[in-house]
Amino acid sequence: MITLKEAMKLNKEELKEIVSDIKTRVQKSDINAYISLDEGFEGVPVAIKDNIQVKGWNVTCGSKILQGYVAPYDATVIVKMKEAGLAPFGRTNMDEFAMGSSTETSYYGKTLNPKDKSRVPGGSSGGSAAAVAAKEAIAALGSDTGGSIRQPAAFCGIVGMKPTYGRVSRYGLAAYGSSLDQIGPMTQNVEDAAILYDIISGYDPKDSTSARIENPGVSKSLNPDRKFKIGIVPSYIKDASSEVQKAYDKAISILQKEGHTIKEVSLMDARYDIASYYITAMAEASTNLSRYDGVRYGFRAESENLKQMYKKTRSEGFGEEVKRRILLGTFVLSSGYYDAYYIKAQKLRNLIKSEYEKVFSKVDLILSPVAPTVAFEFGSKKTPLEMYLSDVYTIGVNLSGLPAISLPVDEHQGLPVGLQFIAGAFEEQKLFDAALGLERALDSQN
Ligand code: GLN
Image (cartoon, rainbow, N blue to C red; front, side, top):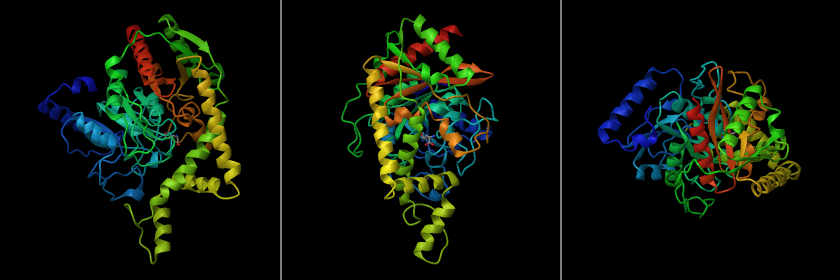
């Protein structure tokens, strides 16, 4: 598949051909990466996770409750893409309201991992990752609240990047955990990720959490030869599978050979990240999802009176995982439990953030696994908690508002193993430079 960088040099006719090739591939495909192949704008086609507003499209968030809803405006990232000559093409499948790590909870059916169809593509941006990996998209947008860009990228063998919180406008992204959500690029290689990141980032007055810090443009200054002090976290690795440990060791030895300095650092036990994240994310989700009441958006259940309508609409419109989170989120915010759970989770969040700050006073970047295992089989996580635990390496980044990039480093029986670099806030240039350096070193080995 042509890269984003190459595609941006094509003329209208050539792009039309690419779009028609993509359509043919998608129609022949059985991986269910797309919920729909909506188009309608000219430009370089980029697949869009179905929780980002594109004017005139049926944005579903992978949920029944948004059936029939038509987005009345473009998200800021879509406006920016169009200005740069890119065109939203197709809505990619996702876990319902971005809650999940496997794309198994979509109302529109699961997405298969193109590398092994008995396995999940990761989630929640599983459709975007699978589309890029299966050559059904040049590039895609995803959203990352607790790893939903990086983990599916790792499971499908592509590049996925989560920007610093505030770097990319959330205006027009269906809110899940508002203090955690960021939109980011999912691409075939590091340079494309930098290009797409530059296009979608920047201050936006329509998002009150948007940072007034300019992005000087990382893609133009990419330097794969820069040398960094890279932190590794030995205590993190012992819980990862042998495939992931092997990839980690491989990356460390390459980075050393390339002239980077590797330094052992310590972070708090990552199980605390899970506790803090799931309380915070569920609390925010419970308030964010209160807007889906059958009055304002999409699906409305048949009923005799208003109260029954609310109840039936939400009972029938939301899936099981979303309901579980609304209930738990409401619980941790309720009086009497607020201090015991929500406040504690926020205190913990501050501690986690300050641990990262300490580490970044000593090193430029952290190298970390993305997930404890390679892509797992459908149905293999038997309880919600087992699924939540698989997010152990990604959510600290969101709790701390940091940028991170996941890239494929190794393969185990045909299944990709991805690792991530994490940087300090607004240090995206370091992230892309190091990732590009590692990508080149890996390429030259193969
Ligand atoms: N798996 C995590 C969750 O279910 C993260 C999801 C995401 O990043 N959107 O909350």
